[in-house]
Figure: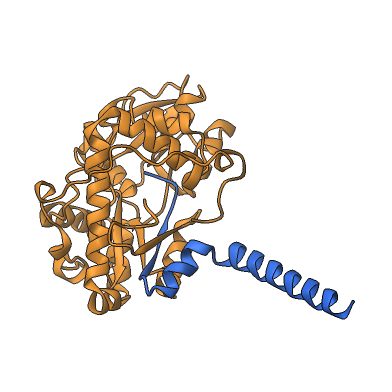
Length: 299
Length: 48
């Protein structure tokens, strides 16, 4: 996440706390682009919102978490339990349906409850749910605080799992392709830099924790290192087969009302091979001394 | 006396204007706008 690209354009990030608000801001054009859930992006397009997926945010980086001392040891133990999901339009929800099918369980054998991601750990701690499936760092939060246990990492049950995708307004694509390309290249280069060295990941956790996420950098360091392939920032190109699998699951489980073609909601023309990209930034700029205590507003 | 009040008022005006620009826009962003630099707002949730 950068404010300035090498070309001098200004990329400003705006933090949200729940998915519906991001969606509304995108529809209202308050933001030109957003990282949103993959099935949500498909639904937006199906609803006629002129936006397209141009890149992935990351791969994997989701875990199914249960209470540390619970008697849940494999997926079948979740029968009759309540599991929080980030949204109906989350790939995490589709993964739950996929797993239920694989474990020969009826689609209603687990109660799926929608909760905003930041509320998942506290809901588990309070006992109002039996587990949750969500993107990091909220899975690691329960693990680090000692009350949660990872039942499955997505990397082990759905390798190269897709959660968030970068969505851009179609009018921006038509008006300023170069700016969209600059953003995509910046994300690709950042990902390549992140995955190249553990030291880079630790630096990024420090900067993102203090200046963007306003979360404890220790938590982000945990996410980015335990294990190191818990979340990946390379291989972010759009692959039709991946999205077809998500779309078919969504239709099968009535999350999407109708099938939607890859070409309708995705534009892979901004994706280039990582070999063509390089980032000569050896280290991130130091975090300003006051950033840790005061934070910076919404950027 | 009148000149001192005028200079003081102008300095105060400049200070308040500067603070407003800093707080609401930011000098770096203002510079970019004046230079015609493009801007894009990207929404995100604090998840991976």
